[in-house]
Length: 384
Image 1 (tube, one colour):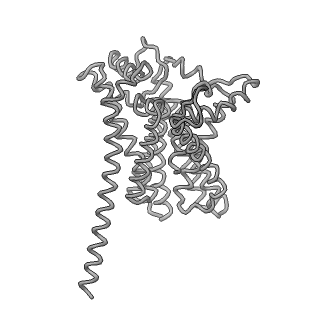
Image 2 (tube, helix red, strand yellow; image 1 turned 90 degrees about the vertical axis):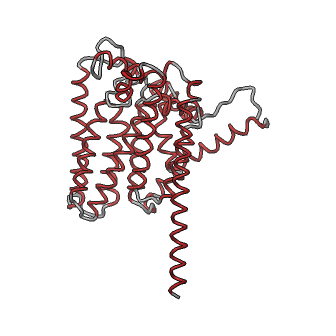
Image 3 (tube, helix red, strand yellow; image 1 turned 135 degrees about the vertical axis):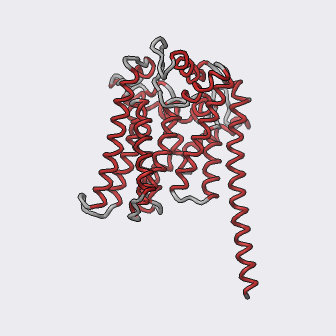
């Protein structure tokens, strides 16, 4: 009987090790695929928009700082992979090699942030591997998404990096508070969240939209919807204090960002941060489905026939993206049935980000380009 029990435990351990190994292989395959894309095929898709991060890095390198007062900036992103590229310009010059190093560094950070978030959400190794593989595959499935994530770093990809990292830290903080474990690890996570919010807010209003406000909203929303307590109970006071802490750190970051810019403005960024005429609002809303589909890779012309085998890929993409868009809506009605509180917080962060982008899309000028939906498409993919 003892021998049989030992054999069973040995077999169980072997299965567990095989599962971990398979998860590692799946993650490595997705990661190396993107590394290969950045180093080789991306050169064929490289164009002027992809040079943004490298040119900003060169401007800072020439000025001996983060900003160059003699350079025209499309966007002000002092806390980005441009800093990494700037470090390598002295070694590899203003070259594709420097660009590739910066993008691979972003891929590493993005991968770690996403995996860290899922781990803090108590996902198993197999779930983490499959989720990572699917996300990387989907973010690489269209030319525009590849450009946004692996071609250069702009608000959208940076915002998601900071959001995933912030939510990972938030899950750890709230989880520890639930267990009343407020020791050194809790304090370290809280301090790291504060530093992250401060540094990400150096990037301005876009950081608020894509990272800070979704985190604050996730904290407050979870406190309101899930705590069956009086509003001024000990638990809800902690939630309010945590949200206030994030807000204060972000406000300080915005102030520092303005001080660092010292009058330097970003013409392209500012041009799309304005309202449109009310007569255009319905037209902006009408653009949403088409923009979502084309961003995800749907490419149809008037000459394409539905029965043509070549159209099958587009039809599959359309049905798949309809499911992707519908899942977060469906989850609204099943919120109470979500098993994990971390999933609820991510869900709330997604919808706050979605709401903020939709306001800019319908009432502002975001609808001028489909890639401005990138953050909500990415967070929608996570729900698969």
